[in-house]
Length: 79
Image 1 (spheres, rainbow, N blue to C red):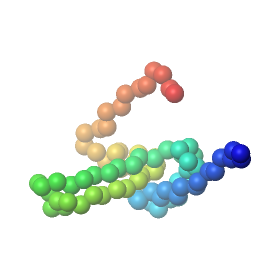
Image 2 (image 1 turned 90 degrees about the horizontal axis):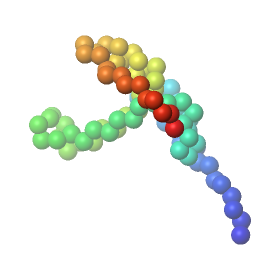
Image 3 (image 1 turned 120 degrees about the vertical axis):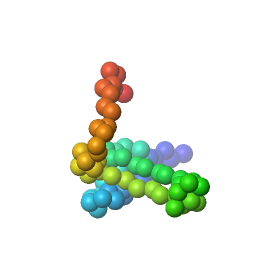
Image 4 (image 1 turned 30 degrees about the vertical axis):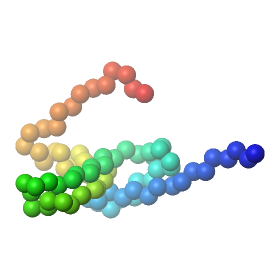
């Protein structure tokens, strides 16, 4: 029996700036936010699913424009 690990490279791109974010299997080389929104009846996008990824730099720029700041909580245990 041959036991070998195959690593797939997933190419993820920031939808805002277009930067490539490389990951291998479940290992992220840098972090990003991934959003999936299923739009419902009370929107103009009813029945659509929107999926996008934002790199950390674009996230900081985006959330820096919010009128109500993002709530930030510190983790006491990092896994």
